[in-house]
Amino acid sequence: MAVDSRPHTQLDAEAHSQAYNNNPRPSPSSSFRWRSPPSQPDNWVKRKWAIFVVLTLACWSFYVVAGRVCTPMIRRYSSTGLGRSTGIGTLVGFIIFWLFMTITYLRMLFTSPGLAPKHVAKSPEPDLSEYRLEDFTPTAASNRPFADLSDAPEPSELAPIGNLVRDTLHGQRISSESGTEVPLKTQKSVRDWRTVERPVPAVLPNLRWCRHCEIIKPPRTRHCRHCGVCILQYDHHCLWIGQCVGWGNHKFFIIFTFWGAIFCAYLMGLLIAVSAKSPGMDGQVLALIILSALFGLFTFSMCAAHINLIVTGRTTVESYSRRDQHDAESRILQQEYGYFFHNSERRKVQKKWREEWGNTPVDARWVFGTKRELWEQEMGKSPLGWILPIGRPLGDGLHYGSNPRFGPNGEWLKKKDWPKELQT
Ligand SMILES: [Zn+2]
Ligand SMILES: [Zn+2]
View 1 (spheres, protein in one colour):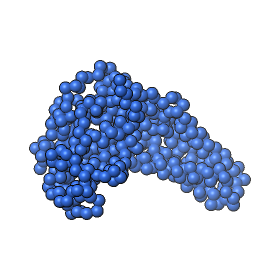
View 2 (cartoon, rainbow, N blue to C red):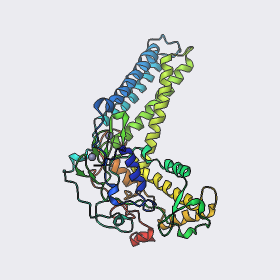
View 3 (cartoon, rainbow, N blue to C red):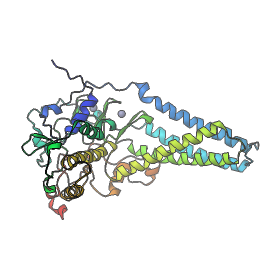
């Protein structure tokens, strides 16, 4: 029996690139079937080592600030000339922020992201042999199970740039109306912008069943290859907490990044101010300034990015589809018009596409309400629970309101196919 020995990451990428109806390579639906070997989750040490790094750094920062900076001030032998009251005030402020940062980190560490097998009963693999890919195009709305990629792809595996580079290196080919491929070089006439169709992600029929967990995955659930389990509303696998960020702990992830950014900003400001008064520079203080700047930048950018994701109704992994869509559209435009010419046609095509789809982004399937409603679904209704590690998200992680501008299986619909009341 022939065995496909390619690594499953490659198969992921292929399945992803094939998931566009305009892709010139026709494939039987069987090629979309999951063919990866059974996943082995990472071992405990590989998953959890970063937690010890974070906790060690937190303890070390406490030692540097309390032991090397504030204690000399309080005992009046600091070379900075700062007095006892400044030392006590600085230390109290530091301890408060340190506690917020550490407690929110621990809360995130001990809160499950939501393991799908605990919420969904096991079921045998559904028989999908009767399904055809054409039945799952956006215009063929049906009540069959929505499908997308099985495992959560790593960002690098989606590799839209790679396709562009490959096409450039190996020569671009386009598909004519009759289905035969024509090298781009031989194409003389400029394609009428009115006839250029937008690439649309296909809704694949067969991948909502997880062969590893043996469950039908609820909406927005993905299998994490590091943890070896399906996660409800999977966002990403986080190295720094040794587990996934998903439905159950996304709220605490955001609260932690918020307090982490504030803690790092306070720490950096405090150490720079003290160092400016000191005749010499303590090596440990300098190292902590650099680390707090790096971690501060990281946590702040994560916090801002995830707040944006929440109010736009997306997870990190779902947001990749917008980039993939952009890549697919760029490929089509490049196939039709090349890299540097026919810019007005290119713009006309893009304008036509935007109008046809009513400016709805491809990743807006789960935008069911206002930004406030989307925010409360993730963070809970109490404003106190938005900044303190208390409360829980609304809902059950299994059911989500969906955007009526999408079909029942997640098909990205043209405006003319929207409910009538939304078309005006
Ligand atoms: Zn799974
Ligand atoms: Zn994970």
